[in-house]
Length: 189
Image (tube, rainbow, N blue to C red; front, side):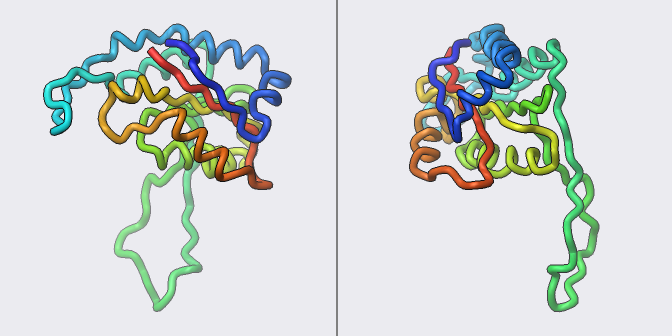
């Protein structure tokens, strides 16, 4: 695969190039090692493209995980303990929330990486919430978000978001004082 687009959110590109040049090169190498054509394995059941063979996001994620693992990138999972002091009217849930967690796909030397082939809301959540949370918890200083280009997303299930849309929204959202530097890579086959 190739990096076909990059967007520097809150000076992400400049900061990461300066702080983590070796890890940035590792990420680009990992992307280059993924052969997207091996993952055209999902047969569409959608009305708009019945029977069309599509890229399988789960298989792509699995391959990215294997490639990142080879270079000792680790996923980090944080258990969520939800506060109950905000319940009102003597509310008591019947069961306890078990197994709730937040997870960052890959972390190495306090650089976080998320690979996202899902719906738009997940891309925004990763950059605007999850990376900030993991920064506040001391796991990362900055992040990289890897997302498909529009051309690539067109060959996935409907609803998969893409780089161009994501960048437009981030540019128009602006930067908040809690946002960390994030470099967004748009990848293509």
